[in-house]
Amino acid sequence: MIALLSLALAQEPACDPPPTDEAVEALTYDISSGLRCPVCQGMSVADSSTEAAIGMKNQVEKLVREGYCPEQVEDYFIERYTTWILLEPPAEGSNWLIYTAPAVAVLLGLIVVATRRKRPQVPVAVRSDSGDAWRQKVLDELD
Amino acid sequence: MSAQQPVAEKPPADRPGPNLWVLGLGLLACAPLIWVLANAFGKDPRALPQNTLGGKSAPVWTLTDLDGVEHDLEALRGTPVVLNVWASWCRPCLAEHPNLLQAADRYQGRVAFFGLSYDEDEDTARGWLARYGSNYPTLFDPGHLTAVDYGVTGVPETYFINREGVVHNKVVAPMSFPAIVEQLEEML
Image (cartoon, rainbow over all chains, first blue to last red):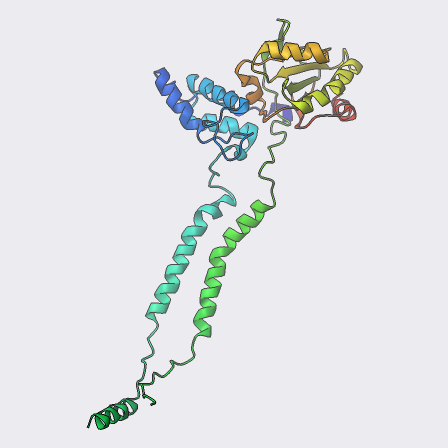
């Protein structure tokens, strides 16, 4: 049964191949920009000139020319390298936290601010008698 | 002279309630990020994916070896295959090479051994093999397309493909002779 598992590219190409070499090159660059170079530090396949990255770029270009859609090409690499290969983590599983936590933090901050603004301000009481006494003392000295 | 200033009275001490709220909300907002970061710090960022094709059909290839002989993986169905990815500039590959030669010698006729050169050109690979010896074919992989098809991340990597053409295991490290034998015995 295990042997029956097939690779993603058992699927047929679902897109039309780009009409020109320039279009192939542009799409190849675009897809490669989202793939992590396996032997570099935080660099994309598109930006790396290592053997590994060159091989990957070649494979992306081959698949694009055969008419595979960008999502299919991405799936091809995920199948071989897991989602580790993606420079931008997919919004799934615990990765959702990365995308939602900042928004939740801002929302909670706004709630705190709104709550504190609604709270009635305690008036600052000023003892008028002491002010009058001081004023009277000044007037006395002027006289 | 003691000037008398208007004295402001302090507001009632009602701080503890709202501050606990703020603290609680702050912790609630930070907890997911702390969890994600703690989780990520526990992992080695340089750790590469392992044996992603394990249990799946090995990508098929038809490649020519450095002597000009064509080899087809499909035609080898029924025979376990060892595919070792290497390069002439790779020092660990050099350390591993004698172990592969020894294993290929021991399992001759029972297991098909192949090298897959990760070098840019065939002559470099030929020169290396002439110097360090070879008793099994080394395939040349133009453009590294087959290597990418197998999910190669570097060299050396060794793939063990069973009789059914399914990837039994992938080892991302130079292999000792006993380690190679262990993998082969599991397949045979």
